[in-house]
Length: 228
Image (cartoon, rainbow, N blue to C red):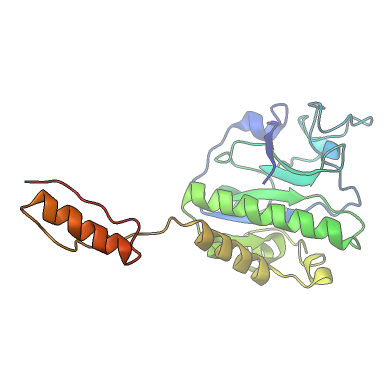
């Protein structure tokens, strides 16, 4: 994940400063053909590029709306894919249009023309990695991740179709997304190791001789632990 931070401190949502207990993650997409982060995140930090229209979301009511999310995924000025955190993760965002604002971290994936499989693959992977990162931070699982459309079906979000107008175009769904998050969480879990004591000796010489035999048998990590 290519994570950066530019908090939208001028947005009225940030200024409200309300906190939440994080219980889930909601995936959104922007609904506009503009994959560049500078459309939504600003001002330019040297990586985003300049938004010449000044219509990014670091203002009280972007486009005249009370709206703000915790992060955006999209292109930097050089075309690199990145994630920008735009609210503290435990702030109440204005993204769901319903009760999910009180419980869910919401992030937007910047849409393009919805025909570029390469771009989709990159932002999909970035979104999976962001969700893995947040699941670890807040002790969540893949079961706690929904999209805006699913939130609407649950009665906790407004009537939007994202991301199910986009993901299926490339053979993906929220079920495959959750499965990919689950797979990565499992892969990142630390492995458990169990030690077996093979003998106890009162003679140091006997212990060292036995250690040689054990290592000769292929147990290279065997060792002697001294104790009383």
